[in-house]
Image (cartoon, rainbow, N blue to C red; front, side, top):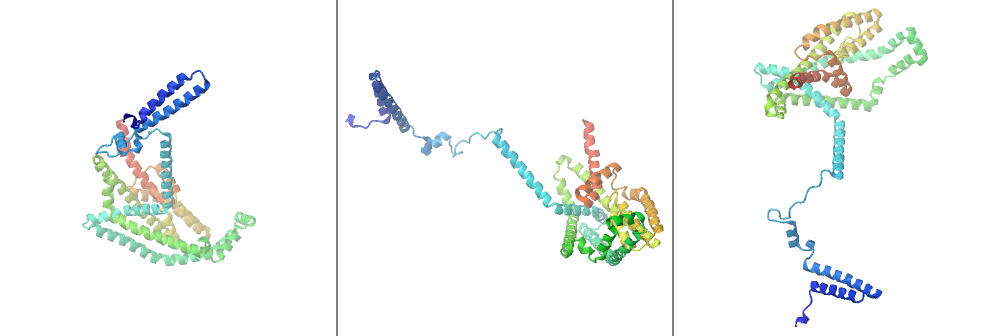
Amino acid sequence: GHEDRPETPQAAAETAVTAAREATGAAADTATARDAARDAQAGAEIAADAAADAVAPDPLLDTQTRRLAAGATEEKPYGRPGKPLSRRSPFRIGFTGALGVAVAYFLVQGLIQARQVLVLLVVSLFLAVGLNPAVEALQRRGVRRRWAVTLVFFTVILFFAGFGAAVLPPLGAQVTQFVQSAPGYLDQLQGNRTIHRLDEQFGLIQRAQGYLQSGDVGARAFGGLLGVGRVVLSTTFSVLTVLILTLYFLSSLPSIKHTAYRLAPRSRRARVGLLADEILLRVGGYVGGALTIAAIAGAASFVFLEIAGVQYALALAMLVTLTDLIPLIGATIGAVVVTSVGFFHSVPIGLACLVFYVLYQQVENYVIYPRVMKRSVDVAPAVTVVAALIGGTLLGFVGALLAIPSAAAVQLILEEVVIPRQDQT
């Protein structure tokens, strides 16, 4: 009965190994016997591996064995987690760097695509901050903020609507007359020897006359009828967007400030609030001061041009008002344009315009500007020039307008935060 039992794989392996060794010892003298011994030994090793697999099966083929090998428990039914990947792995470093570059690229592209919307947001916030002092003045007199915002905003809307209704019709008529009279001005320029010589060489005046007499100056300037419609729609959309955003920012400015101040640490929140309030006060004062100075320049120009008998006085005064809003060079641009028109009328009127604007700019720079801006911004002249150049390069007219109050804000932060901290080190 004992001999009929099946032999276990391990016992079979041991028997095969023993037999191989005996065969190797018995046939060691012949080459055939050595080959047979090697084959027997290889077969014995294969049988031993099979026996080992029968005794201890592969853990991957048995669930319970896998759970024991992984150290699974009730809290961690899937076993202990392995070691994390090395942070010094070249693959991980390269992939993380490439992912960061891709994210930065898409962010920059998004900002570039949304730059027009961002400019409208900045302009709206700038106007809201500029109108906020008037709202706070009404609040100090007992008017609730929502009614103060409504009163200030609709006052501004009604002012510009009435101003446009009073100015646009005569302005349009005068601009049309100016365009129609421009060929005559060009004929007068031919009397100058230098201009006449240049005209003979390059035909400048003839080309200008043909362009003005074509009757479609506006269409050519804006790229045809489709271009005119596109410009009108884009301008209307931008104006409506700025008005709506300005109203929103003006009405919710206290809550916006409160939310922004809470981003600062609690220990520094009060100081951050004081500095931010001072910056907003200076920005608001600058906006109001710039509008006041531009209005004075336009009114003075209109009175002088009416007295001097210059045609298109209202259109030229409006031009001076708009250009005077541009820091540093705006007043000079308006003065050059008006003086050029004065010389078209006659040399004495041109000289009178030149003298008037030279004197007026001295009065504006040393009398009007310091009195109006004394409570808003106090920036060094060199910083003003650099800030206006950088702002104009980045955002054009809007950047130049925002440059000076931005420089004043940076100067305040340097004086109150950076320099005292450096003095303590």
